[in-house]
Amino acid sequence: MPMLRYAVRLSLISFLFLARAAFAQTAPPQAAPPTPESLAAATELVKTMNMAEQFKAMFPILMNALKPLVSQLKPEAARDLDALMPMMTATFMERLPEASEGIAKIYASQFSVEDLKAITAFYRSPAGVRMLQKTPQIATQSMALGQAWGKAATEDMKARLIEEMRKKGHTL
Image (tube, rainbow, N blue to C red; front, top):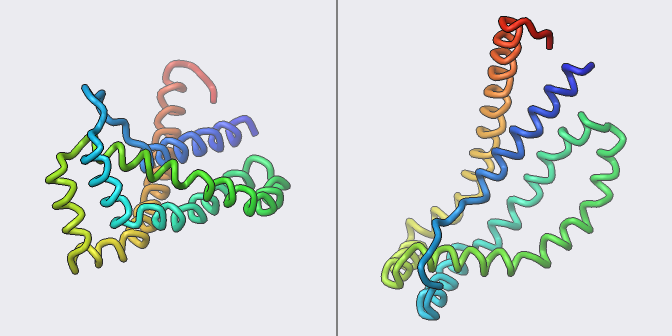
């Protein structure tokens, strides 16, 4: 049983690491805040990219990914998670503008006004529109791949860890 708990914890940590890596990128320190012009161009880009809609599409996927983990840790809690979905969705939706503003600031700090306008023009082009239309499916498939990869990597690391610890005289 302790080994099962260890495996569940390791799986949860791997999932959280992958989720964080998928959605959080640390920008390097910047010398000056973005200019109003660059922020306006970045805000336009974020709107053109339908970033808020992309976040909305990903939320149920992330919540559904949590269900198996919650069920493994505490099966009776899975029902409570379902009951909390409307409240969690409302909280998520309330904070969506904050995410869009933050993303616009990140883009404004990373690209020139000219680049932001060019990127926006791309997303308004036929190829850019198709890319935006396919982004949710690509993200879903990428997350599934990441979860499967994370699970396989976790199992591999667990097996290697156990083997190496046994070589050192530890029993896991």
